Length: 347
Ligand SMILES: NC(=O)c1ccc[n+]([C@@H]2O[C@H](COP(=O)([O-])OP(=O)(O)OC[C@H]3O[C@@H](n4cnc5c(N)ncnc54)[C@H](O)[C@@H]3O)[C@@H](O)[C@H]2O)c1
Image (spheres, rainbow, N blue to C red):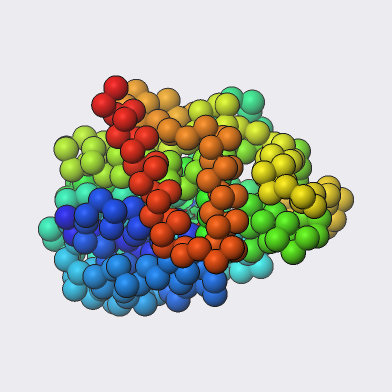
């Protein structure tokens, strides 16, 4: 099947291109240039994609032309400015990319014709955060205290209204995932990236919010959930709906607990220090997702435990640092998680 992934040069998008390649699909991508040292570069993902397009999603005409040229059967829209702290520095750019970029992709997909499934990726941060102990569910109100969260909530609402007002010509669904981790992320100011960089350099990692609680999910589990949703759309289910794509409650831990577990896996010399007294823009203290709708309606759930998630993440970093080929390491991890997911489905 012919897939188009927006954001394929990014962390999730590069893994997604590898997963789709592993599953035998034709993949094209539409993004900005990859960050230096990204998984996209290290695993030479560009060699595996049919059309490797550099298009700014803010440019409506260019997006329209690109989608028409690829003529995809399935579109996964991941391209975004995805960082909370960057959104404080550049709120306008964040809103333009995340809101108008999503509008441009929805419009281009509708005009292209022939798209059989469209998944729009938002985030757990779309929920109006009221500090509740239990996970947010899909009907909960959306909101956003920082520009990133607000822009993704707006993109989510925009997609909902697009689905309703265009009579769902293209079966479209929304996926809301939480913090994902895995090898190959290079985005600054993300916990795992900061931890692994500090451990590799032999310095203590500065951790901004050790008390903050998050759901931790491996990127391959998250992508498996996205593709389960695509399968549901192709089967005539899930159109018009939003789904949380999250790990079980046992994978919701504080940032500090995760930092300690990653340091233990890295081994000698790895440590972290509490940097919560530094000057940081506000971020949510407690944010968890309730994944039960996907479990009940799609029979989908994460297959990796938190321990396995952290094992795979540290193992990837260690192997690539030791000089192993990043594409081979990544594809081996893709195969492991695919086998686990297939076994779960067969049960
Ligand atoms: N990583 C996470 O923990 C996480 C959690 C929840 C949701 N998400 C969502 O998942 C998606 C992917 O996140 P990621 O972690 O891979 O981010 P990333 O920063 O690694 O990748 C972002 C991708 O979007 C592309 N992009 C950015 N601005 C663009 C523009 N103006 N035009 C075209 N392409 C543009 C980049 O080139 C890149 O390919 C985003 O929509 C993000 O909001 C990520």
